Each structure stands twice: as structure tokens, then as C-alpha cells.
Image (cartoon, rainbow, N blue to C red; front, side, top):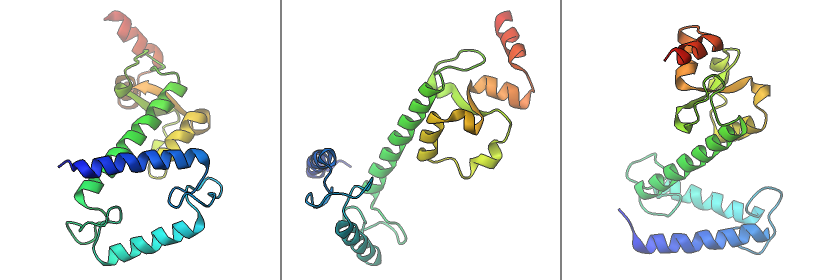
Length: 179
């Protein structure tokens, strides 16, 4: 599924965008200064919007312009896979940053392996937050202000013991010491 020329072009494009981002220029035209935290100038944003609308009506990938495999999709299979991988990496980085900001270990037992750690809602109000606070920006905000959201770091076992078995922190420590 690799496309050698596409990979080489993509690398060159990413290096150019990185250089433009550091200089504070528009990532598309490179001339006009970007406004605020946006990465492109207003004329380029308008061009991209019109181009994407045209591609959608012609059933083309909004990223590369290739034909999409089915009606209603915005990206071809290749671009969709790249986009999904980029989202996974961004989410993983945000979660790792939040875990490090929250101490990097389970508050009850000290587990440090990041794949076992979960964000525990102290007041059991996770259901109210779940629908609106699952995005990457929320995880980044959480890293900066966890007490505001009443969230702490527990490993999966301690979180399940607290939630489903109604065990306290002392009871979990006692069980760990017996073993």
C-alpha cells in the first residue's frame, strides 16, 4: 500500500510546513502572515474551503484529490489511514502528557505502566463528562487543571475495585500487602 513518490513528496511537504510554521507565515502560500493561532491566512483558508467543497461534490478525496471508495466518504483509503494514524499518535501523546502531569503512577497502588492507567472521576460523575469531554483538547486541558474536573490517576484494577467492589484505598493496599 506504500506509494514511494507520495511518501517522498509528503516528507518534503511536511518539512516545508514546519519551516513556515516556525517563521510565522501562512502554511499554504508562505507569504502572508497568519492571524492569531490559525495556521493559514484568510485568502488561503477560503481557497481550501472552496476546493474541498468542489472535491466533495465530485466524490474526490478532500486531501489528495483521488477518487473515494464509496459515496459519503471525504478521504480515500490511503489518506484515511494516514489521518487515523495521526489522530492515534496525537491522542497517545496527549494521554501520556496528562499521565505525567498527574504523577505518572496509580494513586492507590503505584502502578506506572501507562497502558494500565485510567482517569478516575473522584465523585463518580464520569457519565456527565463522557459525551462532551473525550477529545484530545480536553485531555490537554485535563493535564493542566485536573482538580477542576475532579479526576485522579488510578490503574485499571484499582479503578474497577473502587467502582464495582466498593473497595477503599486502604482495603486495596491491604490486599496488595497480603500477596
